[in-house]
Image (cartoon, rainbow, N blue to C red; front, side, top):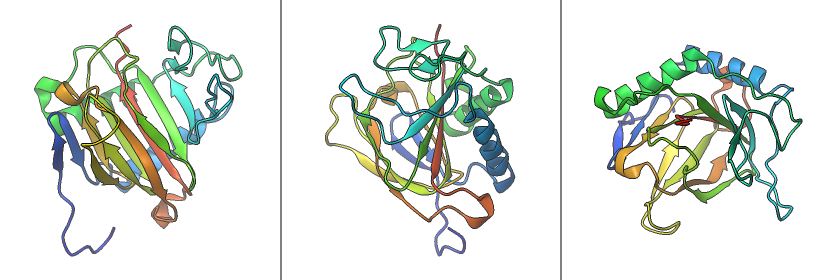
Length: 219
């Protein structure tokens, strides 16, 4: 938030996990929001992820590069198999370059993967959306995960690699923040227990929270 007494500083939350506040400037946030709005349009647009038991995830999602469907055998497909069946939208080169720059800034150049980033999972959270503790374990590469936030502030719970429970650390992620986790924290459990509605900056023009996570498929 503007005019804070003590500006937020980058923090090493766990080995290989770094939070960089205000990494995206306002111009980049607006440009990324405009891109997300285009990606969310059909075909293969924003969808509600449904579980085999009939439940739904409260955060809605659109994918680029590969379509993530956690309840299928392959986990990643080239079509929106649980949506309209259309081919997944392509992953743009500029987004991959943004991911590589994020890893460089957060973890250093030695942590940048040799393979290019080729997956984006974009989650939209309204005021009531949550994300349970989970691991990003469906990729065939161990490259760091890059997480970019737009809009409303959330509580991001970053845990350990053994259990969904404690120990964990709650981090406040605001619009423009970067969070990268790799190395020994690559398979740490993490989630979003709550979003703080109405905290997005007025100049962005977004009600809710967008989270863009970038991954290397290894495929």
